[in-house]
Length: 70
Image 1 (cartoon, helix red, strand yellow):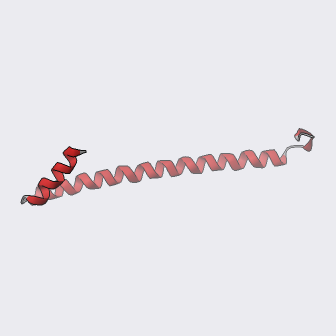
Image 2 (cartoon, rainbow, N blue to C red; image 1 turned 120 degrees about the vertical axis):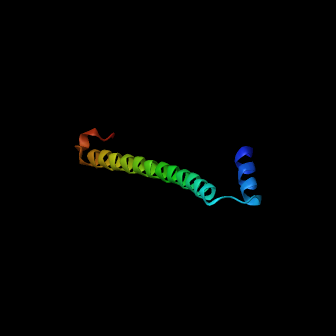
Image 3 (cartoon, one colour; image 1 turned 180 degrees about the vertical axis):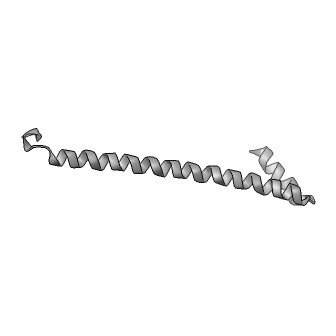
């Protein structure tokens, strides 16, 4: 964490070449891509979970009433 903060601070106070600026921006873009992919993976897992849940609940409602406790 401190290494990252120190690197950001050094980049703010020194003159960087265009190649260094592009490399730094690429690093940030890769981090944002990883975060977005993680979010998409989580959303897909939620979709699959809820689809299975709906299927299970519909099957329960469609089952004969003899399965219901009295």
